[in-house]
Image (cartoon, rainbow, N blue to C red; front, side, top):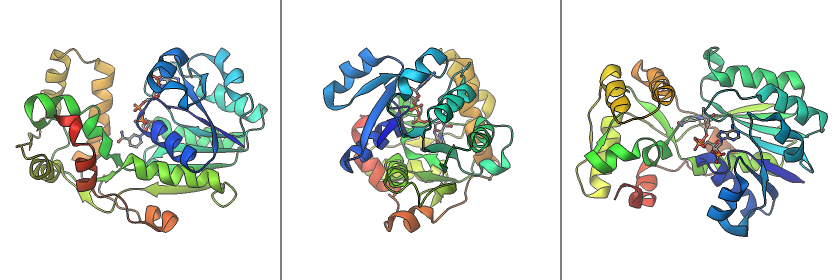
Length: 281
Ligand SMILES: NC(=O)c1ccc[n+]([C@@H]2O[C@H](COP(=O)([O-])OP(=O)(O)OC[C@H]3O[C@@H](n4cnc5c(N)ncnc54)[C@H](OP(=O)(O)O)[C@@H]3O)[C@@H](O)[C@H]2O)c1
């Protein structure tokens, strides 16, 4: 059994690949630029080209694949439905799809439509509806933390249910270890507590030993600043959209699915901050 890991060079895909490898499950890692990925990760992984915007890459990427860890990347012109049709044609036996917490109440986002498309194809699946990634702090929030010692994001005073992507990867790899048990199920995976960004800034301050603040910018202030830094407008709008439910107080729900599935407690944000502290030096 070979699992195709999409989004391998990103936050979740990479952790999923590591977790599957540790469990001895055969994987093939998808990347848009195989040469770049091979240069970066060496020969520890077996790569295949896959670009969701380029249907010519679909059949070769699906060669010899029985199961897929599937994520929907940022960006436009993706031929996602076509990819799912091809997966069905090639008799893929299971897809574990990375979705988002509360997707069932968010009919206007891609994940809502994508879950429906996967069901429509009739491919056995597991939906992983994830909370807000802790690793956003060392990804798109990192630059402002490093350069200005501030968490700069328009999330108001709302709490959000942070999850460590390493915990997500653990649950995702379980779904491939026993796909029958997790067939056509949806799990909501969060950490054990919802926090607002003032609390996160306080915890970072204590652990990193330097003051980090949360400046609670308005949406306009955030947008103007990010555009003046040269960030892509579409990306800035996505970041605003991700934090809007938090601002409205709608992102604080906690789920026990991680503990039920793994028998372990979810990673606390303090552990995450300690483990990743070099990212903010
Ligand atoms: N951030 C959060 O808090 C959060 C919470 C819940 C759910 N999610 C969902 O998580 C997903 C993103 O996961 P992530 O944060 O791990 O990703 P990420 O770190 O943003 O990385 C994106 C990955 O997608 C790949 N990619 C980009 N365009 C592609 C294309 N056209 N075809 C094939 N691959 C492509 C990239 O590979 P290359 O560029 O190397 O080709 C990269 O590996 C999204 O669907 C998001 O909605 C995020």
